[in-house]
Length: 277
Image 1 (tube, rainbow, N blue to C red):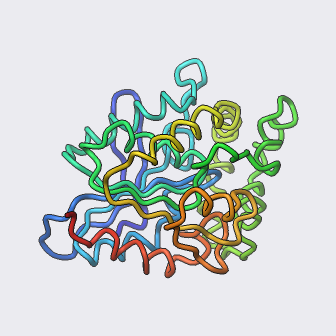
Image 2: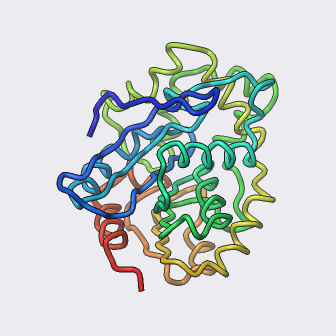
């Protein structure tokens, strides 16, 4: 796995991504791992090598406006779910993947679920970890306050919001070296804060969760839903009531791949390896 990441130009946008190449020749379907807020593709750093070792090409991009990818002005990019869907389509096309498996986590990772629901022929299987997949989902106050005009403008410029949010979502301390990677964009440019503010203002959770809840009922491809039971923002009880086959991850919070990646790998790798009937 590349420690520093790679870049790909797609239209006017520059995507930063981390990836894992198969350690041996393989025809396994590529895997796209999508992060939530206020995270980065870096959150999948301990999952990528496990997938590469099993013969998967795995890619974890930073969403546009997040991490080390482009952070366009709102006049050029409106940060709405439909726009994110469009640029995700373009990204996957740029890699020339005929079919992929999608792994989605968190708020904004939900765009990956929408992609799968709208392009079922291009998605072999779908894995979901702590995403807003039910209509009762609400943006937690910790994030919602960052979308309030003036208040949010200031809050989203604070590099320490990363620490408070990532650690607040699971209750685990994140190593300083890892937090440095997450904080660095905030220390380099104010654009990342402005982008986060725009994303939070345009999540359109009501419409997005309605599409996802309805669409997953008709999803015919292999589906894995793993849920950090300690998620303080998306209650496992609500998720279980709608998706009884959900796999509960004990002692794991909103960011499973960050909180306890071994538990993610234990269920994700076999799911991706199983033969599609």
